[in-house]
Image 1: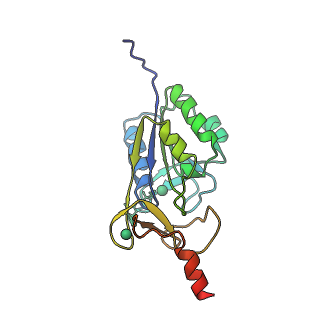
Image 2 (image 1 turned 60 degrees about the vertical axis):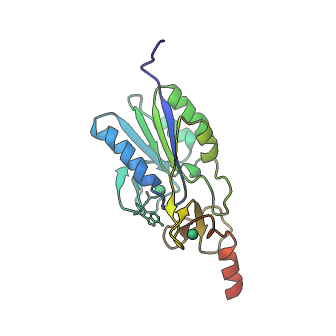
Image 3 (image 1 turned 60 degrees about the horizontal axis):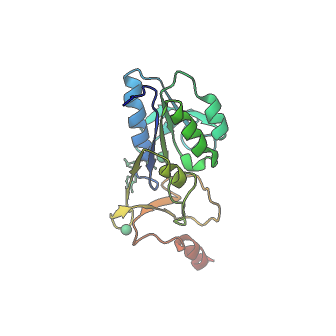
Length: 194
Ligand code: ADP
Ligand code: MG
Ligand code: ZN
């Protein structure tokens, strides 16, 4: 057997909002950073909820992050010496993220991508599902259902909007379990008010 020193891989942390994806990403990147392994963290330029140059979890953990427009800019921004690459909010990237991740893993990098696997209607939220199929390690994170305390695997939008992306946290979304998730809920509330 010939063991290669330059072997990279892909890790995906997938789950609904509030499931601790950013927390886990920050933890994984920080432990390398503390051991002086060169790391870089990226996030989509679209996500400016708390801070532009940082990934911040709902529990207020944070790490420095470079905002990038798309997967192409991400690829261009990776330094040669970087070994560990963190990516948060992977669902806001274009489909090119899968190819870029594979290229970087092929070049010996360790990629850690966090993102939503399902959208607010419970549909696959690409490119995370495709990336999960191409990853060596997949962690499915669960939140606590805001309604009943059960295993929250869905992100429930609690304000009415037909947009795929409505940025916001506590006020616009809740984690819900299989029984309490109802994609039509916000729609119906609006109808009741009208
Ligand atoms: P994600 O990136 O998956 O949205 P974060 O890592 O930003 O999640 O935040 C996870 C933290 O959110 C938890 O450690 C907890 O402090 C907080 N939190 C708020 N609401 C919930 C919930 N319903 N279930 C679990 N954690 C929650
Ligand atoms: Mg997050
Ligand atoms: Zn529930």
